[in-house]
Every structure is written in structure tokens, then in C-alpha cells.
Length: 527
Image: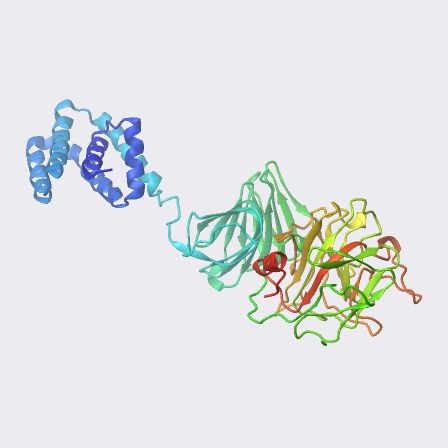
């Protein structure tokens, strides 16, 4: 739009006779050139004083206005614009159409309000937060800080926000979160965990369709369904929860929870910490150490480890039973019949609470049933809860849907949502990241990936992770960790052996991120 056209629109706006198309054009121009907003505001300021001036001597006022404006106009278009404004001043007095002009001013105000919201009711558009981390998210992270009014909307992955006042917010996709001030946010849908890390952040607010949550120095999880139903689960400290249904406020303490809907609010039996991811995996600059079995040997009773620095170079995987060699996703692979075939390695696995990633290609038959999925890759012991590390394809319906990727620790498990029972190869990765302040657990420190995508969890249960080891065997592939032929467990309702195909098994001592996992999947190369 050329300058003369902008001035024409401004003049018409002051007169109050913009047509609908012209109104839209002026609004678009103001959005592109914020300086026009100031011009509108200046004109509005003058216009507000017209009524009083016109009551005395309108012609003298108009002449003075013309003189002052002309002294600042140095173009033909500028002088024409001045003449239009002065003409409007004179017409206002002569025709006494102050009411009609007031309607024009309402339009000007509406334009300004659309671009510069009324700050008496809206927070100022200033930077108040930043994206601290993003993992497996499709949202385009801004390169600068986040302003009041920013909507963080994404369908998958995790995003950690850090408010300048000292609040950490972890969002889990799909989510829609709006930053409403330097100490508040509005969760339209999805899940988040808010943790207060600074004293000035006490009183931090999370709003939703049916409630308001005010922190009193705490850590809490919030979920909002697509229908707007809101839940709060207090993980630490105290939260005041106010329901919009009846206006009542309830103080919730650690391990307490509440659901707020359109008609009422009700306490829940207890907080469900397993429903939330409380932090993202930390960055690890170290090159990962790992073991790797690619199963390329065409014959013999064992497969070599081609990994790096994690185990003895002679750490092989020995064939136990009728393991079949087949064509894999990359080169050769192995197939387990689900009856007595498995592999055993001298490598004891990663123990304790150390970070880890286990990745592999798996092919699950379409007719895969119950008691056939446990023991794809595992190590540890069933001697106590939390000491096992067993990756499976879930085949126990009471604990989750059949055919989904599963990690169990004996008493705690995470089960994914993708059904792998299609007879096709799928790349799977299970990531656990440690916690410097507390023992990691299955609900907050484990991520599942299928074909490079972060898996929403169909089921989570809390169990502190402290993987142990045994003196009688190392890593197993294809056999249930709970099955023993030495008088121990028989595998029971979980089954004894895995039925399916396996390729490119990797165990490393770092928590790989999505970029690294996708590179491993597409290029078959470790970082």
C-alpha cells in the first residue's frame, strides 16, 4: 500500500466513514506497520478534544490545527491529508454530528484494540518465558523468548518451558498451552507438570475451562481433556483449586487430587503421579558406549558384539535352542519360535539407575497371542521389585493392550499404543534417563519410540528403578526373565519365550534423543 492510500484511510477513519473493505485494509496495514498505530492514537487524542474546542471558536481552532499540521507536512500527499482532517473538524461543528463521529472513533478504537489489546484486562506483550528443551515435538520452537499470549500447540512429544520468574513447565503432547502472564498460563488441553523453582514464583496460576489452580510453592500435574474436564494432581506441596462450577476453593496437599467439570468438582482418591512426565532427558555430550549384535554371521553358535567400549570385545551372544537365521531389515536377523529358542550373552547389562537406551528391529507375527511376547531383550533379576529390566511385546491383557511395546521392571511397567502385530519390521527404542536428585521411575523417566516416533503410553505404573544383575546369566534375548528351568518361576501367565524376529540389537549407556534414534533407524549408525 502506497503512503497516499494509507493517509486516505486514516483520514476516513477519523471521519468515521470507512467502508468494510477499507476497514480491513487499514487493519492489515497497521499490523504490517506498527507506526500507523501511533498515528491513529495521536489522531484519536486530537479528536477527543474537538468537542470542547468546537464549542468556542471552531474556525479559529481549525486554522490553528491547519497551521500546526502543515508545518510538519512536506509532501503534496501530506498537505492533502491535512486538508481532509481540517475539513472534517469544520464539518463536525457545522453539522453537529458528534454522535456519528463518535461511532467513527469506536471503529478506530476497535482497530487499535485488535492490534494492541486493552492492557487494563490483558497482560502486556513482553518476553516472560523461554523454551528450555523440546523432545520429539513437531512445534516450531521460536528462536527468541516467549511473549505473553504465545500459544504452544503441538500433537506429539515433550516441551519444557522456563518462566523467568522461576517456574518449570513440562508439556506432553498433544497439548495446547497459552502463556497468559509472567506468572500464569492457560491449559486448553493436554498435560503439564509445573514445578516452582524460585521464591518469586509462588502464586503461579494455571487456568482451565472449569477451574483455576494457584500454587503455594509446589509441584503439580494438570490434565485437561478435549471436553474441558480438568484434573489436578499434587506431587509436592500445596495447591488451591477453584472450581468455576460453584466458585468453591479447595486446598490440596501432596498426593491429593481433584477433578473439575462443568457441573461440579470432586476429590479423587489420590494423586496419580504415573500420569505425567515430570522432566525431559538431559543433554549428554558423551559419545555413547554400547554393545551391538547385528546377527550377520551365516553360521556358528554365537554372534559377535560390534559395539564400542561398553563390554569386552569378546562379549558374544550364544544361541540356545533352535534359533533360526533369516533375512533381516539390515542384512541377516534371527527368528525365535516361542518354544525354547533364545540368545544369552556374558554382558550383564546396565545396572542401578544409570541412563540407557535399548534399540532394535522387531517383526511380530499377525497371529501373535497371549504368553508369546515376554523377553525380547532383558537383564536383571526378579529377586526384588524394580530390579528387572525386561523389554517385551505385551502379551498380558490385564496389564495393557496386546502387541504393544512394553518395558517392565518387576512391579512397574510402561506400555505403548502402537499395535506391532502386522508381520512388518518396526524399529523400537526404550530410553531411560537418570535423575541426579532422585531414583528414576517407570512413569517419569522412560520414553518409548516406535519407528522414530515418541509413543503415547497406554499404561504407566510407578516403580523406582534400580536394575540389579545376577551371577548365573547376562543379557537374554527371546526368553522371559521370570522363567527359570532351575526350580524358579515358570513364567506363568506371562509365558516363557518370545515368538517373532529380531535384528540390530543395541544397548548403550546414554539416553539417546529422537534425532539420534531416527539416525540409527534410517542409517543404521550410532552417533
